[in-house]
Image (cartoon, rainbow, N blue to C red; front, top):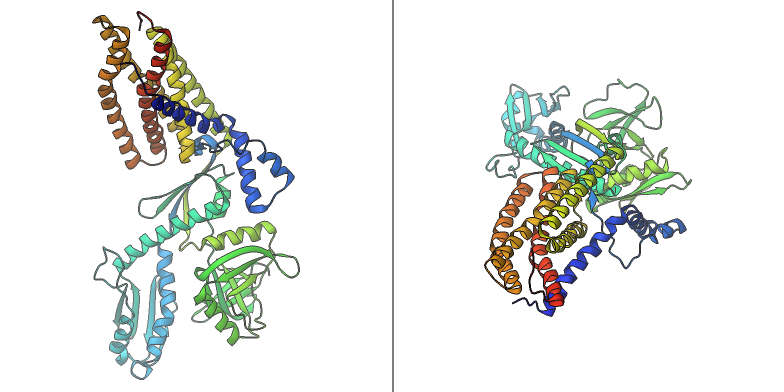
Length: 554
């Protein structure tokens, strides 16, 4: 009856020991965190005595995984950004203009001369024909540039709508393409923001889409919302543009197809550059901080195959001419092309500090945001507030644990002590599992653990009450214990299964804090069932084998 095989005993204690070992680093959180950071820095940036001293704070043979603290516990920055999807419409029209121009030039004999209308509304491309009789052929040529919309909702539609009236041709994106473009833009922005934040090395950021065009960003451990905005708020649109002219008048007429933009380094200097870039940052595959030949901070860059070919062809054909390196509509530098630059690599120089060159390299590596972000909400949560939450969570957990432990001892005596030992193991196992999976603990997550403390003994209560009933029915102690566990097991599984289903639904349907609560609640249910059915039973069996009591009191 009361018999557990040796291999089962070893397996149960091994699982408990593993849970305790993986939970152990959280008892020395700061020390282990510093050691982990030092080891990571040694791998990426080299060894130093200071890093070695920090790494030695925690033995390498012990587990070093930690439960990540959420924004409400660690402090950090919270941003809600809206993606300006309309910016992409104008960019698409600018990119389309060279194709339209080339298509009409090839048929100038039938279409006649034409020119672009500079005062067209944003997101529209307008052309005026010198000869209205060529309108039908011009419309046919421009409509031939249309492509199918690549989305399920836009099946059968084309990406542009072309209309003509009198001598004026108007080109704009179709409604189906706008919907598809909006979705692509937000998805791309989401991924680029994630890459930029990952490059900085922050822990467990929350980056998720909200609604159709908004993105929620929460980064624990970062200094302020302003610091977070400096990382992700820059669009980092890098382009290489042909220089048309240079002057000091910001209001000068640039001419059709050109624009006037300021220089970062030369105050009061403005460059007139072609709107259509030679190469863009989208064709950049790598960017690293470096130093130029004079020892000043700079950024090395490298293009992909297509970008390298275009860059090489342009430099070969324009030796002696200046070209502008433009970042977010500001000229970083405008060097003169001295020779053909093959291979698609080069260097960006300017009046950078080391920090600025490193920051620029991070932005360029992560890629350019396809559209600007408007920050609708920003909050900085200080670490003091996070520490207050941790302290409050500790107090709540300790009070709940003491109350439950006291209740179990008063109600069930020695068996209550056995249940309390299993409860302590249960809590340690929750932290151990969270450490292994890299879970994030939030304030609602602490609430889930506190709730688990109360629910963990529920299974033991069912078992002990069944043992009492068996003892009252005249069963022997061994028989009563065995029957109590056997008859209570189905009720325990059924009761906890419904709670797990609830936790799964909360995790699937919820976000942020709700998911944190669902994770700790679900893990707590699994570990509490394990400790109630297996750990307490093993402790009681070991006690019974040692004492062999004639009577027991529960």
